[in-house]
Length: 196
Image (cartoon, rainbow, N blue to C red):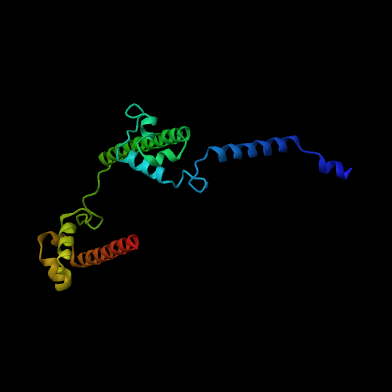
């Protein structure tokens, strides 16, 4: 009796396994291959990167009326590595994604503008000082630091050198000098990290 149970096949399990094995065989046949016969995945392919760049730079319009999928497919030799039917579907999906993101960005910027009309940015902080971010004092301090004035002058001397700085107490101004130095170091670190 044990032997019979082992040899009996669950029909549902057999159907599922057969379906998936057939699906894998179909996928293996239609997937593009390189010269060595290895499958070329779309996810990290050069063709996908080029297609995204062309969509973002508007070389390829987001709507199909401007340029059909066949015309896009014939544009670059990298696209020919993939079967046209699959490429067409992927192009359609990328266009939909780009249009959705464009619509989302438009609605979010409209919502932000609406919120800014209702609640405008405060012109002064809780201490009654003008906001530092975006102020003329911030812009001028960056120029002075580009000219290395903060290294040659004491913070009190630099504070007295421009009228725009006088809106802020010396103690706060010192902290902004330190904050700008940290910001510059962080930007230099990121640039160095990206270049290496």
